[in-house]
Image (tube, rainbow, N blue to C red; front, top):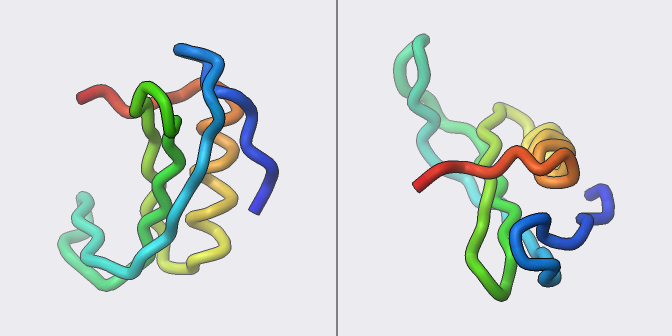
Length: 72
């Protein structure tokens, strides 16, 4: 996985995890990989869903480092 930058919301340290799960998108439901990058201090996060675990990790890290966080 690419190195994660500090959180743009609070400056805190980021971490990540990847798990297998159900991906739901415009094509329906299927098994895939979900990577979540998150700030351990404020809880900001981004998730990426892909068929390949390395691709999910790469995409989530890319979005995190660009400051594209999920809205809750």
